[in-house]
Length: 71
Image (cartoon, rainbow, N blue to C red; front, side, top):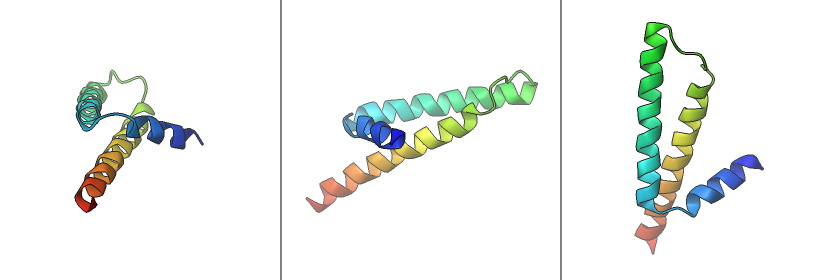
């Protein structure tokens, strides 16, 4: 149920907003990788959250792209 609401929120955003959010997630992921390399990372579970959020965004972007192509 929680995933449906997250996906619904993403579907209500524009493609540029989604792309910007995806870039921010990738930046955060990069910073966390650097912290892990130096031994300063405290929240390792956030990696999984970032990967899943990025996958949701990519899925919504592809859905909108396909729906525009078929319309």
